[in-house]
Image 1 (spheres, rainbow, N blue to C red):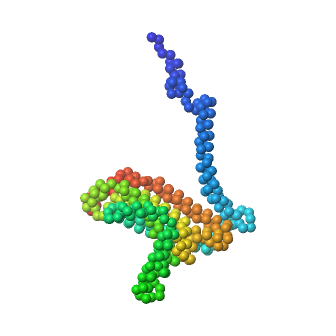
Image 2 (image 1 turned 60 degrees about the vertical axis):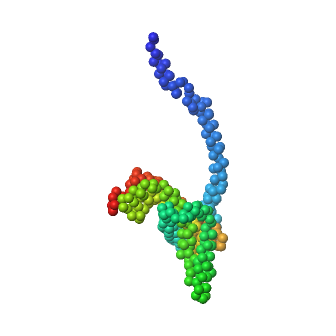
Length: 327
C-alpha cells in the first residue's frame, strides 16, 4: 500500500468541519446571508422600539427638555437654580423622603410579621387570606384611603361610636389629615407588596431545617433569626426597595387623605402645573423625582446582585441551623 498523502490529509483537516463544506458566513454568499439575517432581526425589533420610544421615551425627553426652558425663552439651567432654591421644594423633598422611609420601615416590619404568621402558623382561613393578598395588590391606593376615612375620619365609625357613647360633640380621632394619617395609609396599602415576595421565599424553606433546629432545642425566635431570615433577606430587600420607590411617587393617598400640610414631590408637581401654571417648575420637580427614583432602583439592583438569591448566602442552605442546644 502506498503511504497516505500527507498534504491531502492536512488540507482535509484544515477544511471546515473536516469535510470540506464551507462554514456558515464564510465566502461572499455566507456573508450576504448573515447580513440579511441581521437586517431581518433589526426590522423585527423596530416596531417595539418605536412603540417604546413613542409612548415612554419621547414624553420623558420632552419633560427633560421643558425643564431647561425658562418662561422668557431659550435654554439654561436657571429653572433648576430657581426651583432648588425654593423653601417649598426643600420642604417637599424632606417630607417625601421621611414619609417614604417611615412607610417602608413600617411595611417591612408589619409585612414580615404577617408573612411569618401566614407561612408558619397555620390557622383556619390562612390560605384564603394568602390569596386575598394577591387580589389586594390590584386595588387602587385611594380605596384604602377611603376605607380609613370611613373608619377613623372625623365623621367616621370610630368617632361616631365615641360620640354616641359619651354624648360629646366630636370624637377623639383627628389624625388622618396629618403626616401620621398619610403614613398609616401608606403602610396599610404597601404592606402586601412586602408580604408577597416574602411568602414566596418562605415557601422555599425546607421543613427539615426547621425540624432539625427545633430538635436541637432552638426557640422559635432563634429559628426565625438563624434559619428563616437568611433565606428571606433578598426577598425582604426586594420588597422594601419596591415599596420605597412607590412611596416616593405616591400621589393618590396624600390627595385623598386631605392632608393640606403634607406636600410631597408629586403633590408639588401637581400644584405647580395645575394650580400655579408654572409648567417649567413642575418639570424640574418631576425630573428630580425621577432621578431620585432611578438612583434608588440602581442602588437596589447593586445590592441585589451582591447579596444573591435565596440559598446563595454562604453556599449552604443548612448553615443557619444551630449545632447544639443553646449554641
